[in-house]
Length: 336
Ligand code: 13P
Ligand code: SF4
Image: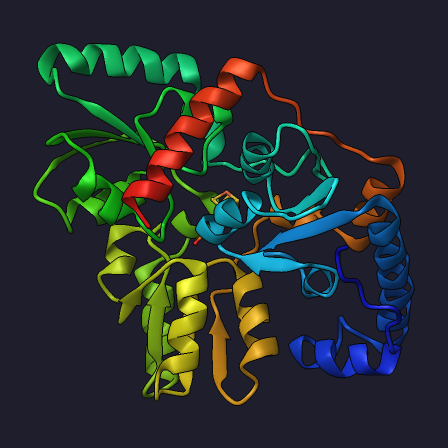
């Protein structure tokens, strides 16, 4: 049976959440959250449900999550959810699809179907098939590697998937010197800098990371001496060039915990800084202050309603599911 906390003490919740933002996390709000969290815990037990949450979720969502992680960890976790009947995915649509790929017999629920992704929207299966066909005339050995931030039907057309945690490893391990890398042009640039293979990139980006400029990083560095800059590889090339470390979201967590430094600029979506503030209270984290509007569409109310009404269910065509699974399994093999 899946574990759930029996009750929540509102003042303990306030203590935990308040340092994030005293204005926003008032005692009244935390009391309201405590009630919603208790309702969710009850529904989780009744539904035999497990909640998986991405690192960019709201702090109060972390309170109801059975597992929190980056895209790679969540994909791995989705393969081993024990005896749960229902998976509630607190993240965005392509991540919930991945959970469904690995759990065709279980209900996989996304609390808000508007939780999409600008990066996933930038490539369709039709456009990818056309481009890959064109390129195969020039590079007959071409392989398609898709960043997991894409739809399941794009994954199904790929030779392998990758995440920000293993993109370089997957590209270097795959048996071709010519790679069509979709859909993130910034991650493609980053991979190109770490491989001798030819990377042909797609014209997509994450609107959250792409808006961060070197000027913003420079200003933070000038204001805080000794600041360590940790950037996500979805950032622009000129921002990456300024970083002390370029890491996936969970690798950022590990780095910040293990580093002897105590001041970090976290150059990614703000939710990760919230998780760091909660879990590493003895260090200082400066936020890039960029929010992903899609990730933030998931709320406690939405999760409770999702469990109550078993909505909104992710469905996939069998051939898409099988194709996407093959590409995801290849990633787990090459990028482990
Ligand atoms: P990771 O969690 O894999 O680092 O990815 C970040 C992201 O943008 C997910 O949408
Ligand atoms: Fe997509 Fe960017 Fe939001 Fe991640 S942060 S879900 S890549 S829009």
